[in-house]
Image (tube, rainbow, N blue to C red; front, side, top):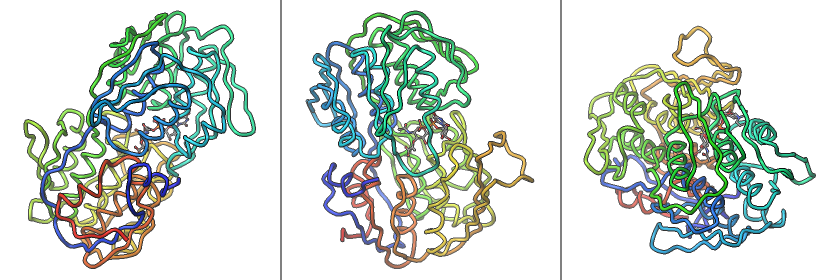
Length: 449
Ligand code: EPU
């Protein structure tokens, strides 16, 4: 992950931040469109022959990556107003694999270009994929689904080439796991395939529902049926859309945890209750206070000791894997032992090492804790973190490992007594819009090094 490049993309002057902690974060910040919808919505525009307009686009480096990739394929992208992109797909063309590589860096987004490019051009090149280092993150579900829809997959030295000489055709597909990306892959590929596709064991995250809403605006026929079944009736042509992206619930949950960890009080403008219900339940059990406002949610520390919680990450409507890292920082201040089971990725507790250096008491069990009964069935890759609190945190020098882990390190440094130097913070700009400005708005004491 190229942190400096990510920082540059959003105009972040430095890749290192020095934080003087121990001060509550208070004030109001706004969240805009969700990273995990906006990037996919931009790809969906490729399916239409006329322009689309996407609103509430955040200033994050992942958006710049997708923009670069779209431009490499002949799409003209214009920022019509702050946060409003016009995506003109009138002249879509093939891009050279080196050019795709240059834009994609280590992002995983290129895999979702497959379906739209197969429809528009009959072929697609996908570079070797990266993304945050939070496990193996394979793409077998994607490739199997594309094969089922009629694509031919050829492995090259530097990536994958897909062709569909006879076009894509509807199929019955069952995912081994309700993968977010693979569900999006099927949606983006099957909407313009010949015939009907039935997708079983689909992911139903709010961002996926928003993508379906966009596709429906474009002319698609998609029904979400009980028990994770999505039926897509292929249509020949799609037209451009006008859409305002769903808010970023992962960012909202991150600032909520920051309020709890720093004994602060933060209003997250733009946050909505429905998409955060599972998070709000856990937040309340841990002692966190919240109030749902008309235009956001206020999160604050109760002023009394926090309580330990038991959490398992899961697909929606379960507790999102992206919420556990920031919450764990707050749990270091709860009175007693919290247990967090990670069941979505096999390597998402690496960030806890830095927290331990800052004074936390977190033990990671690589294969989960067998004796604990849990809501989510065990997965072979599951791990558990046992957090014993409360432990005062002190400043440290930390290098950010990935997006969510990195944000947690920021929160920990803000909660800790003393000074911390956090490097590689460019990674955080992949998914947290203007986080430096927001820290300033919330009264954090820091300087860019
Ligand atoms: N998986 C496979 N094979 C595949 C695809 C997935 O084995 O072909 C496995 C993964 O290895 C993982 C599990 O399935 O163990 C779930 O992966 P999923 O496909 O659901 O995740 P994703 O689409 O790669 C998106 C978000 C993640 C978020 C997850 C889970 C984007 C760009 N990324 O990833 O967000 O954690 O869904 O909700 O939408 C983040 O924002 O920091 C982030 C990592």
